[in-house]
Image (cartoon, rainbow, N blue to C red; front, side, top):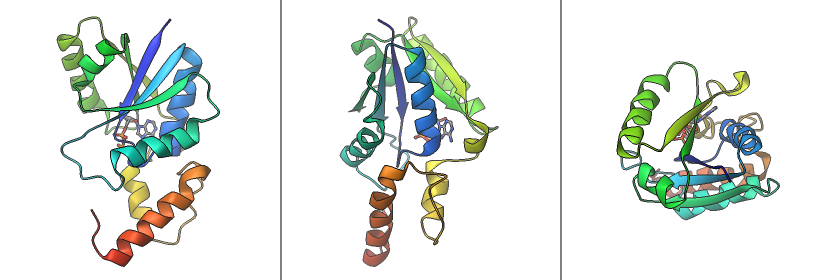
Length: 167
Ligand code: ADP
C-alpha cells in the first residue's frame, strides 16, 4: 500500500490545499494530511482547530485521514510507513525553500522522496495568509476557502477583531 503524507500549516486549509489533497488522493492508496508545528508562525487557529477544519472538508474522500505532529517530518513519515511527501508548488515563491526541504528530508531519511504537484492556475497565488488578509474585508471568499469552513473562518475573524488582539 502506497501511503503519502501531505504536511503543512493549514491555517486555515484553503481551496488550493484541497485541490492538492484531491489530486494526491487519486494517486496514492492512502493520504495522511498532517498539520505540522511551524515555530516561525503564530497561528490564527490552534492545531486541534486546524485538524477539525480539514476533517470537515475531506469527509467525502475515503482514503484521506487527518493528523497532527510535532515531530520532524522525515521521522513522522518513517513512523507512518510512508516514503512520499506531497508538496504543492505555487508560482515562484515555493521553489527555493521546497527544494532545500526536499534535499534535507531525503538526507535525514534516504527512503523518503518528495513529490511536487503544481498548483492549479486559479490557486497559483493563493495562500492562507492572503485569505487572512482578505478576511478583514467584506469579500466573497468562496473562490478561496472550501465552503464548509467559511462560517468558522468569519467567526474567528470577528472574534479577533472584537477582542482587538490578533494572535
Ligand atoms: P501556506 O503557504 O498557504 O501557509 P502551508 O504551509 O499550509 O501553506 O502549505 C502546505 C503545502 O501546501 C505546501 O506544500 C504549499 O506549497 C502547498 N500550498 C499552499 N497553498 C497552495 C495552493 N494555493 N496551491 C497549491 N499548493 C499550495
